[in-house]
Length: 68
Image (cartoon, rainbow, N blue to C red; front, side, top):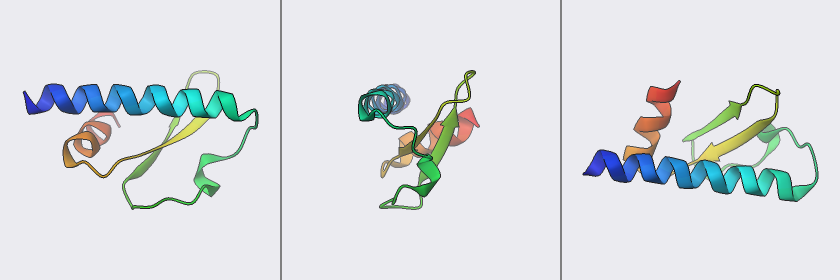
């Protein structure tokens, strides 16, 4: 059950990050964005677009690390 919550959290975070990225109207390098924690990752899609994903939840971070 915890793994399911982790997967759901990752999906929600990625969807929100994508929505924020495209609604911002700019092509800011996510690595230059201030992060609140050390648990952040830059995700690049097949088009070369990048977004930063950050989490404070251990389960979500573990899922992001596994996806790497």
